[in-house]
Length: 230
View 1 (cartoon, rainbow, N blue to C red):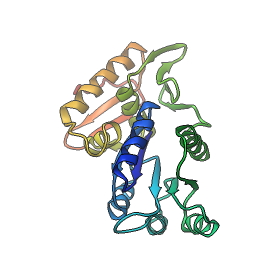
View 2: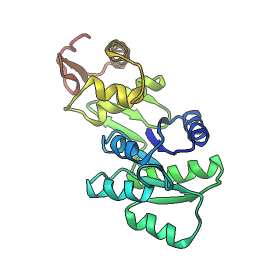
View 3: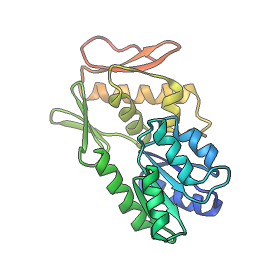
View 4: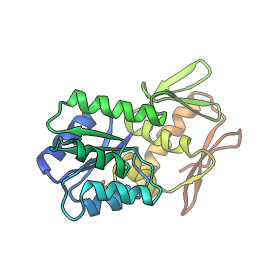
């Protein structure tokens, strides 16, 4: 799961990213509302953690603009304010949840679990495509009674491709979702992990395949046709 943190307190933003990464989440960080809005509009994030008091645009304006643009990504507002009118303003702007600073890591993670349950991320623990199932908790890929564990990046790659089964996914989008939008990862990193994932699919005896579409990206497809190598 990839989370966008929009927080102008650099130390707090780093602490939040550290907590999330230690608990298996991917995290990108930006420090002002205008940049946060631009990144959030990309649709690459599963949850947005959004401070209220931000330079350039406050959190209320950011979430309101997202909802006007029909971006439905869950938003968790963070603020030092605890006045009821501010909470009402945030929720009326389109935020899904609200947390007052200071808070504990356990509280933050509980709020994230609640948000993802509403989106079905936790309710549906397995993602199925073709003859494969991906366990979203254990990161195991399975076919029938046979399974194999995926590394974190293999898991993220499998999730992106299986979620978009039958559709072309660009290398740029894969890099953003698997390595992060500020990553220095390149096309050869994607090609290497596609190769790793294909080998594990072959180990399972899957008839699904990852197709390479030159200059376009990759597509997860079901069927017995021979895979196209990287």
